[in-house]
Every structure is written in C-alpha cells, then in structure tokens.
Length: 149
Image (cartoon, rainbow, N blue to C red):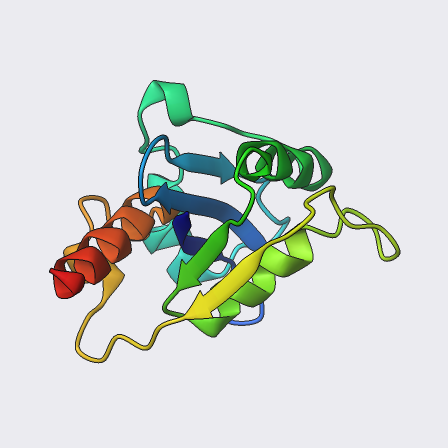
C-alpha cells in the first residue's frame, strides 16, 4: 500500500520535527519530535504553531528512537509499504529517522520509496493546516489520487 509522506524540519538541512503519513487506505500516522534547541525564525512563525494541530487520537509526541520504532510498528503489518513524497528531503529525513543509531535500523523487512515531482502543486497551499506534516501529507495524497482519476 502507498503512504504519502510529508515532514516538517528546522529549515533546509535542519533537524526533523514531525512526520505525517497519509495512508492510501486506512489509518494515517503522525508523530512530532522534540523541538531543536534553536528554531529558525521562519519555522518558529510558520511551523511550530501548527505542530499539534491534529486530531487527538493522532497527537503522537515521541523522541527520535521511540518514533523510529513506532513508525516501524505502524508500517510493519504491510508486507510491501511504498512511501510516496514530492520532496526529496522528506525521503532523506524519513530514512535517517529509521536509523535509531549509526549502526542500527528499525525492524522493517521491506520498504519502497517513490519520488513524484508535482509542478504547480504545493502541499501548503492545498493543506487544511499548512505546514503541519499530517495535513500536508493528506493534501499530497488527495492531489495524487485525484490525478489518477
């Protein structure tokens, strides 16, 4: 099954702050990580106020290691999960999160990635809550599924 990915991070090249996965079918996933000590001014204004703007049942706040294992649990029941993203850095940050230590990776037997370029589409413009990873992931899912007809 496909899971449409969005992340929020502390400026380009900065620390991962949240992950949203919008499932093609079934339950979506969201996790917010502890904020970095110094948050970029743009991120402070446009991302931080919306980090927890998710339904209560999806308000998941974990440290990096717990989040990595929680995502593995979420995806673990799917024999062939495919992560779809429209921004390469989202995939890079997601992959780094799956490594709780430099020489360790979470227990996911298989995972695939699909980068889809979306010219003219911006998740933040289409999102119900711009710059919230869950809502942005849902906007990406809705957009790409609509294109498929």
